[in-house]
Image (cartoon, rainbow, N blue to C red; front, side):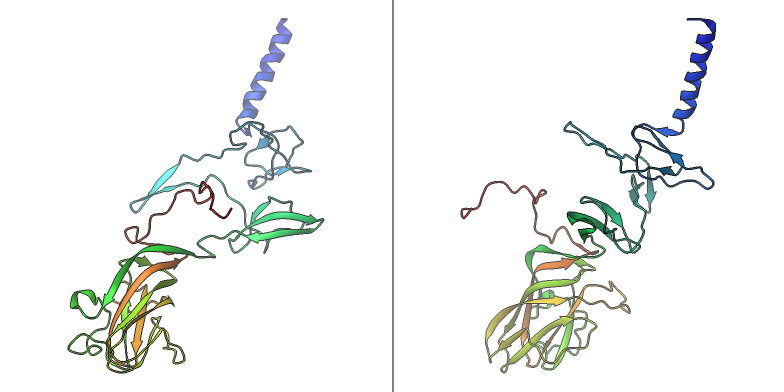
Amino acid sequence: MSEAQHEQDSIGRRGLLRRASTVAAGVAGAGVVGVAGATPAQAAAGDPVVQGATNVVDAATTLRNTGTRAALRLQSVQTYDGGGEVYAEPALQLMPSGTTLSNLAEAGSIGVDMKGNIWIVTSQRSAGDNERHVVHTTANSNRIVPLVPQRVLDTRYASSRGLVRETGYLDASGRLLAGRSISLRLTDHLYCADAVFGTLTVVQPTLGGFAQVYPFGTTRPTDFSSINFAPNQIVSNAFVCGIGSDPEASGPASDLISIYTNRTTHVILDITAAVVGAGRVNPRSAMPVRANRIDVGGKAAWE
């Protein structure tokens, strides 16, 4: 190699090294958020993405993978301590924009609207007429979580009452007085739940009547019943009830329900499931579930 060729080769290598400090390996991709004053980089197919600059592309970029591994891996190893919890730095951000995805978006497109909802296009029916859906998360939906069936109230036994309000609402035997409501806190099992499933049982009421389970903090509805009963019966009925909160409580303020009866009677309340969104269920109270709910294995007899 001549001296001139050697010098030219060295200059070329230095230029590549300088460029490597601002270039991410890979093909041209979607726009990267640019720094103030950055000049858009005109990227054609096969060109790299310039970090920290606005990348302008004329068409969608495809990462094609013929192997069994992921086509793209975004990894962030940075973490920080936040009051006893370890938080991971995000590896990916989708910039919020608009109220939904464009009606021209292709099937499989994902975006985030200005309210933080994640949208996905599930199918392309025709040009400009696609199927767009919101992805359900704890921010905009809830789920039913099965609980280990357990008794949370039995007024026949003082140790099984755990009531928020007890004085003046029970007789000497612990029975709920006619025309009174008692409130029950479920924070041993739930945290900021939306509703609870369970069974209400009345034990030997003095007269025939009805009982109600309703959300704490709401005006008691007068035109419904959770259970109807005759004198001296032991009878139960399933219920689903929304959960209220008490912002003025000295203890935990969430996860409260109320029970009313128009006849003096013992009441028993068991819970079997909860509806939660952003809230949680105490792991000790939840039924164990399969880690993989999609591949359940085997076939039902009727398939």
